Length: 178
Image 1 (cartoon, rainbow, N blue to C red):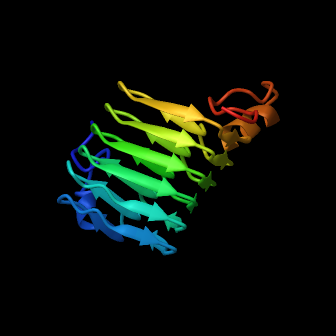
Image 2: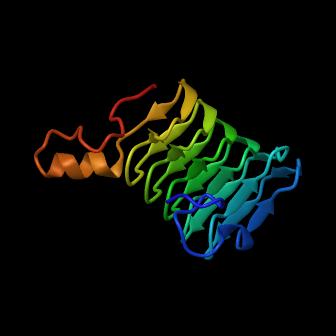
């Protein structure tokens, strides 16, 4: 069951972000390194909330997504390196929108980008590889424009290949350019 904070349960994640952007805020966050051991590294939520993240490294989020966009918020994530997060690198949910451009999204525990529950976005020019599940995953009435990305082997692809199933299972993509 999806909670209002974008999590799948437990305590409210919005109280524990390294950077919490809400209430119509529109900051420009540039050239920062962000990590978190409590919840998502960066939580972006609420209608009218529309930050820009540029040139940031979002890493080592030990219990959630690197960037979590939800509850009608909009975000631009540009030229960021998002890696080693427990769940997706970027999660867009609950009628939120994100434009993710020229990012490196890799080595995350689940998908590189997860879009669900009426989330939507534009994903362009990104390099996605070595994520635990798929490079980009859509579910629950989600949609996006996906163009000009480079999608390398995901961890699930590699595991399927080692098991002798042909290397394509796991739903991620093994080729370049989506």
